[in-house]
Image (cartoon, rainbow, N blue to C red):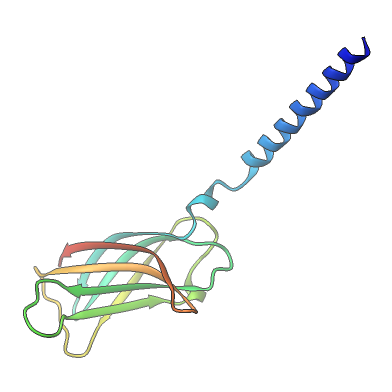
Length: 142
């Protein structure tokens, strides 16, 4: 009879342990798995510059910049027209949730973009050590 009680107690303890673990997992923030993501929503001409609307999420305490870069494609000549812009770390809201931001890309000296041209646009996070990650790219007609 004692072994039967012992088995019931062990089984009950194991069941409680599993339920507590499952409860802790369910209570964990579900957004953690989606932090540090990027998506390009829209690219528009804002003569002479470009504007990129981005949806982003990032970890709290992250110390990275959000960078956008564009270059004209199928451009004959030695130099490709380019534009770039950033959102500094202190301007990002990093709380695991998704946020939208608009980045103005300034054209490089001697570069220009015209309506109807194709451009390749990339957005990514850039850290203090020079590494980039979560890169997203798209090709658009301006």
